[in-house]
Image 1: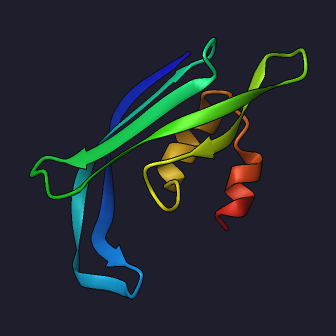
Image 2: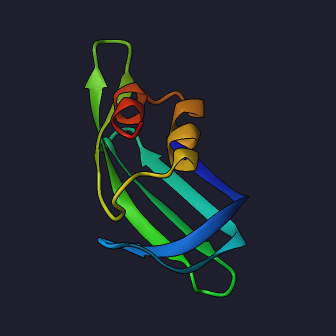
Length: 104
């Protein structure tokens, strides 16, 4: 089980299929990451205090072998899973190696 809440400073902006739209701003994001090991499912959410920046999504896992390690195999909600979400999962003991390679 994982239930993390923390704040992180990030440079945020809006993008679409044509690229960046407008200026980027440095903001403090509140980040929530939850995983239910029994259901092999989790979720994430991050937002700033003004409500200008917000994202959420699901996290799906498969169990690896008999050691009980859960491997992140899918996500939704954002185009690319932010590094701070992947780092939180890795620090929580979840296997995110393949997902990190896909995002490089």
